[in-house]
Amino acid sequence: TTSFTLQYEKPECLQFPLETQPRLLASGGPTNPYNRSFDSLRLPMLGMLEDPTIKILFDIQDGIRYVLQTKNEYTLVYHGTGVMGMSGVLDNLIEPGDKVLVGVIGFWSDVGARNAERFGANVIRMEKPIGSRFSLREIEAGIKQHRPKILYLVNGESSTGVYQPLEGIGNLCHKYDCITIIDVVATVGQQPLKMDEDKIDVVFMNSQKGLGGIVGLSPVSYSPRAMSKVRRRRSLPRILQTDINAQAEAWFITKPIESKHEVYVHSLSVTLLYSLREGLARVAEEGIENVWNRHADTHRYVHFRATKIGLEPFVANPEDRLEGISIFVTPPGKDAFKIEKYMLEKFRIEISPGLVTTLGKVIRIGLIGNNANRETAARLMDALEIALNSTETNS
Ligand code: PMP
Image (cartoon, rainbow, N blue to C red; front, top):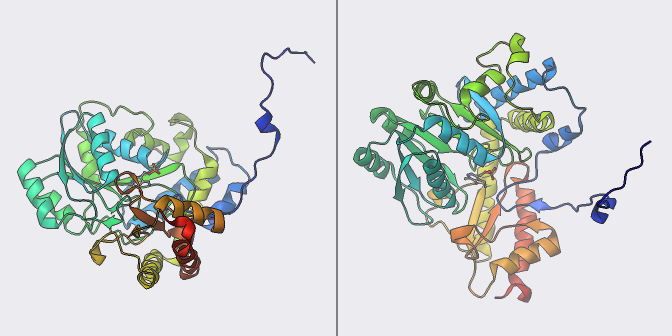
């Protein structure tokens, strides 16, 4: 053995094993994964180009198509979180100077607008006050006035708890010849999505909310119409890792399995893919329509309990409310940050005091995926009632 003289000693903090305590993650995501998904992380690791691994890629493609209700061939997964999916779809669809009309109703739609600018788009913002959403008529007026190449909307604006319906949007975009990009991060696996029926062109999501998996993957789906815009590009997308044509080869959509040694884009996180596959399998086992109903039922129950303790919903119109994330106005005299701290310390329940524009003004409760059931909702609302009655949470 060689004896080395180290310049720096090993960090003391790494001499102890990691320990954590269980939590109910109810802030709006990441949520506690489905058990099947979490348990799969301990399965033996396969090599990334083995046949059983490639089968997982196909299982995931089928699962994503099922939860989106689409037959889109170009359905695959980017490595990275939902924001990576957002950047990837924007990069593939935007050519410098393209007009992109963004419906801004909160933090995430604003991120979409700023991100589109980074890819050289001429971004036009349509804005609505926090807590509301666009009518189909308002969207049509915007498209008619600006004639964008791309319309960008957020289906579930998780920062304000607002649901932006998609019915009719696809037809409008066909009529005015534009491509729809929809952020379905906060709706997939929670609220009804019918990508083909609603003629939506591109969607992106993440692995850790309604799909009940672990943070780190971002599924996307591109319609044939979207792919024909990609094919007409005069320049390559800027990010190699999310280039849809490169990835369609690596996910064996446009290349046969026999060519597996020729299609390397980047390493696959085989374990994260297990967990996404198992999250999707768990959703399929229950049936996506039953999963949607379970989220709707939990949402109604949360609001029923909230009414009883005098909490006022942040989104005035019940039809505009997201179902996975319920937001309530912080009651007068109460401090949302103290409530957050109390819930975590006393009950090991993580809730959220809002995000950016709503920060401190609201109490945000996400009951998503594994946590979307009455039993968990009752546990949370019992704890919240105690928290609200505690003098420790006064402002
Ligand atoms: N869009 C919406 C509506 C979201 O709620 C989130 C995550 N909270 C994102 C995008 C970004 O996803 P990620 O955190 O996985 O990057």
